[in-house]
Structures are given as structure tokens and as C-alpha cells.
Length: 279
Image 1 (cartoon, rainbow, N blue to C red):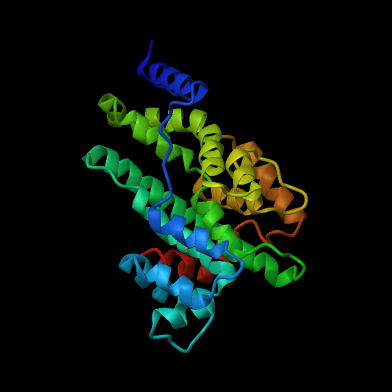
Image 2: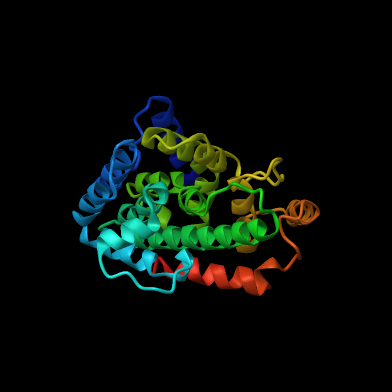
């Protein structure tokens, strides 16, 4: 049995017997989400929760003062930052900012893989949000949310994190990145859905994780479609023909205006703004 098949067999067995160790949300993200779900929560209470984590507090300040929020007047306190972001957005934005804490390993080769996965997720999120905002500029009836889009893109392939963690027990795997990527392609979609269910994430997140690899435009337009656009840009689809057909579908539906959509100034600008939030 090949190393690849052996790892897939181990993953399959652990999934079937519910023994696969799934990543858990950082504690601060759990507290923020629980607090945000309280219908009687106040902005001050949310500020107190976020203030317990200095790194997240700094992130919230950065976001509140960023071009992403579209404000020119700078805020100087965490309470002002939370007020500017708003309770409706803080749950997803704070979760997105806390996710990086999961991508950590004490082993150098494993950390390199996790760093790459996190960077890839940031790129997907930046492209997806930029395309969504461009689409909303011409389709004012689109009710999709930029903060949901950001988080959705960051967790669309979260199952890969569980695969890398399991592969950590098989050091020979990390000497062959293509081999590891092949295992991730096969196992990550199903594991991603399991992770998101365990985290209590809604249907829109699970749908994106399950179906973004499918080269088929959705109707109506969904968060998954903007992840697919990012996948096209990143070259994630193996079939050039299917990728081309998907791109033509999005042009026909006016989700994008031109084939080289990342070269459009508006999209390129938002892409840089979103990516800067994670630097």
C-alpha cells in the first residue's frame, strides 16, 4: 500500500468511527460568538469580551480604521472600534481574525504547510470579497454580506487543517508536497463540513466547503460562487476546460464584467485592502 493510500485509509477509518481530531475554534472566538448571539448584549459587553485578548483587540482597531470599513476618521479606543464595526458584523470579523491561532505547529515542516494554507485562505478571502463588492456595485439587490464572505472564504478548506494535523504523524508525507495536496483534495471537503458543523456554523458555510470545487455556477448567486472565482484566479481547478466554462457562466450572469476581472481597478483595490487586514 502506498503512503498516500495508507494515509487516506487512516483518515477514512477515523472519520467513520468518529475518531478524527477536529480543530476547535480559539477560545476568544467562542466567547465572541456566544456573546454576539445574546439578543440583549450591549456594545460595552462585547468590548469587554474582545479586550480579554490583546491580539484580537489590536486586530479590531486595525479593521475599524481600515479602508475596508470605508471610514476616514480614525478611532482611538476599542469601544469606538466595536461601535464602528457593529454587533451585526463583529461575530464573523472577530472569528475570522482569531482563526490564525489554529495554524500553529511545533514542527518546522508542518508549520510550513500550515503557513501556506493560511496564506492561501487569505488570498481566496481577499479575491472573493473584492469580487462580491464589485458585483454589489452593479447589483444593488444582492444581500450577501462582506463579513460573512470573508469568514466563509477563510474556512472553505478548513478540513485541510485536520488532514495536515493527522499527516503530522507521518513525517515522510511532508517531503512530498504534491502527495499531501492530493490527500487534501480527496479528504478535505467532507472533513470541512464536519468541522463547520461541530463549530455551529450555518448552512452557507457548509455549502461553500462542500461544493466550491464543483465547476458549476450557482443560481441564485451564493458565497460559494465568489470562492469559485478565487479558485479560478488561484489555479485550483485541474480542468482548464471546466474552468473556462465556469468563467463564461459568470460572465453571462454578470457576476464579473471581463475575463481578466482581477485587473479591474475597483477589484484590485479592494483585494489589497482585505489582504492588508491580515498583515
